[in-house]
Length: 267
Figure 1 (cartoon, rainbow, N blue to C red):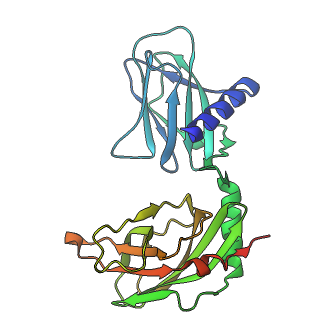
Figure 2: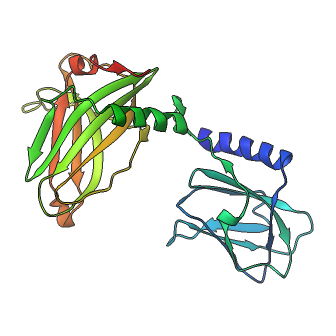
């Protein structure tokens, strides 16, 4: 919600300061905005006179239609591909059926992830991690059925920790990723009946890797709020494969608090 609030305030300032993009909408036609990527945010100024929604089957397509004829203009704000598009909507029977959104003026979307720092800064810091390409944790790895995952490095900037993972597919068949999971859990849980696991959710993922082709190695960076791990607990990093019938290969390895404390500071 805070992300949307920041975007809304920025969009209002943008509309008030600069010339607006104009869209004509009608109650007898449905117009469509074609976006270059998935729509991250959509908000119409007055839903009592205008309907605006992302098409469920196509996440990059927005349909807009007037509920009824109206005299005063209303607004429409769209965020996609890291750009904010702000429109003034007018009623008219000459509404166009399709609008390529990239033909309109836009502004860089300064969206935020959590409370740490803007996405553009997180991206730059992740790029630094990948460029440095350090391997400080050669023993923190696991391998199964031709798939290998290893922790290369942990970096720190203010309250953000950057975990660089390297995944290698040694087979000829592509590995489709279902999920990366981070868990704080007990070291020994074979006989435990009251094991408590706490899932840690990354606030940013650099490349959003979804598939690893055969005979390919990829590197990915996850940003997590800074942490320490209590005694007798570990941070488990888990990689799951997307496959029919829940038959995918799953790999995991663990880190101790002494590993976390080796994080190198990013300049």
